[in-house]
Length: 144
Image 1: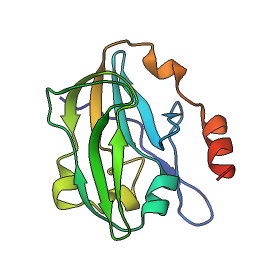
Image 2 (image 1 turned 30 degrees about the vertical axis):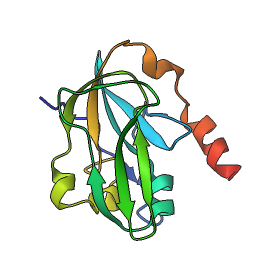
Image 3 (image 1 turned 90 degrees about the horizontal axis):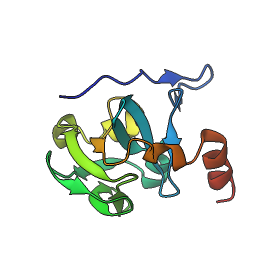
């Protein structure tokens, strides 16, 4: 059963999605947010969806699949390209965002909200602690 994560905020100026507090990042532009002691929600970052352009299809793993950190778990297809999605942590898929089957554009309009992709039951509950903080991720994307 999916847990609710904190709702994302919009910045004051242009309505750009702002990441919820406590979020972590990967170098592959996925975000990870704890939804429980041993579960996390995963999606792609606002930066990633901007680079992709209009998302037209999202392929996600099935509930019950086991994933390894760094392993491919699906694809995001946009009008520009097809990009792989990687598991940021190891564990078992406990939820997938079924809304994306019919509304893949949610990845563009709400990357930190309704555009989330999967929830993972962590093989190691401390695994997200080793991911990038927001300031480190911002430094990564600033470097290009």
